Length: 309
Image: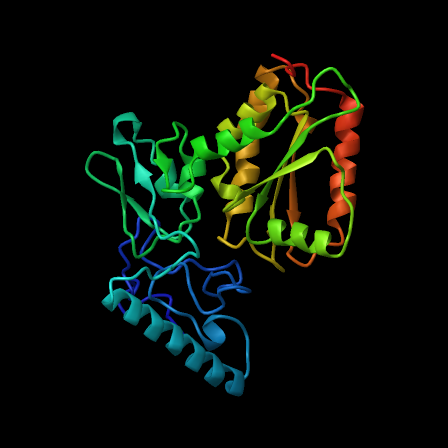
């Protein structure tokens, strides 16, 4: 187990992270990670938790846990030695890129990255450590001036998807609801609902996103300004018995909802037109009722007055 501090009172790890020298811990004192999908990984690259550092367990389970964590560490060293990504992502190995000419040096991207992949240089501009990056896009959602993008994932690309959706005009019964669904829990759960022939409202159009934390308030404003009658934001559950795939993406979006509500007020639109929904990947049977309830709310509010403009 990693001790809280050394004999001189200093943290023995002394990690050089903007977020502090320690491994982030849960409120119960265990090393924080995604305990379902990445049970041995901490939020610090190359440091793996096993045994009672990770969760309460007996001696036999701790020994098995230690072997599993050791294999993860070997995998990390082999990838680093070969110049490969420590945290590969299927279909995309690009890292975030920054259009520094527009950077306002606010530091939000570095503060909200759950893995400490971004540090600030002397000019207060973000600098990426590739070994720490997990390509979640949370930095992209955090940036207020949209200077962050990936090779195949950006605010402009998501805006293009929004514009590609046909929005019927002149018929109050034909509404359009946009659903941003995270690719780790919400989108697979939607797939499972379809495989099981469960039905959800025909008004809904789905755009997959890497994480709810990557959704910028600009995208929501873009959708409602274009005429979408409602916008749903569906992602991983947060809480003690589950967790966002990227630790705190859903939680960050909940915080950004204040900005989204301000945008709706500025557009003189009802705040109920935008809703955050949290689901586990196993909640596919709940999705139809959740979406139907949201669609019923939108039908009661009526068409978006921006439709057709």
